[in-house]
Image (cartoon, rainbow, N blue to C red; front, side, top):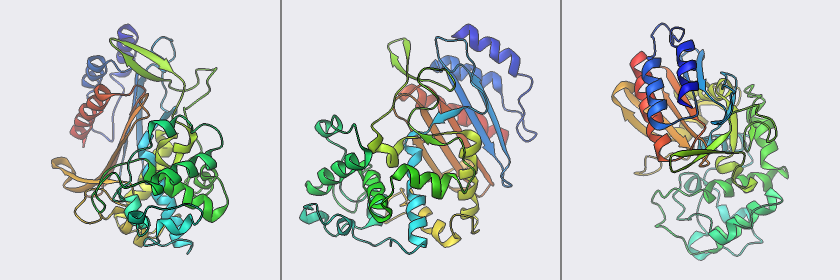
Length: 358
């Protein structure tokens, strides 16, 4: 892999320029080499919605097939803000309210007493007290995704809360339940709702669910897991029940369309999919948490000159980060096709290089 990376590095080193500020591709290359990343893509979006995308490395660690700027990448839990955005669309349509009781959508399920008054906004902010899917149930989540999501709802709402309610404790079932609510209201599978109400209006034509590309053709980056010093390529993903919590794949260009929509919302502008008032609710934290009901973490970095939106995502085979910094009018999108802590560290270091260009 190192030999292939060196070749690609030589070809691209002199040509990368982002809005007039050169990103040090030499440093990026060394980060890839340091953390043994098969492929890497990053995009920088400016205040006008223009996106510069760079991608280099390999789609598969064992194959001579380069990544491209138009490739799709798995973004894992960065999907959550998309699900929350879809919820906000339903709210603007008058079909939902932030303070609706979650239990009210599932009269057929015996809900634990402590969860009967949990609201939709608490669910999306991870303040419901609900914990992760049990190992036993996880093994049963293949098959029909609507039925599988209802199995998650039944376990989550029927069990004693795992965490103190009103405190942020991140758990995927919160967003799986949100997806199941949307399915109940619309009688339409979640994946189709996302395509119709979010992907299509924003021109996100590359977006889909599950592993990017085809299993039998190397037409997109292949996910990898680490096995000691080896990288093993795998075409796969979490069960389809997890789509609302983290199964979207998309190109950085299309992900950039989505990021720009939220950047406009942060500036107080209406967009084709939501009014500014809805974005305000999506971007405001609930209580003392730093996690918003819009599926974002609020933080401040020295370079951001004020609060920004951030999230990461991984299905254990990919790693992705998104940063939206309204005070400097930029968003940053990063993805690599290997999961794990080393990849998390790598993307943080790549980000450190990118902010030097602004």
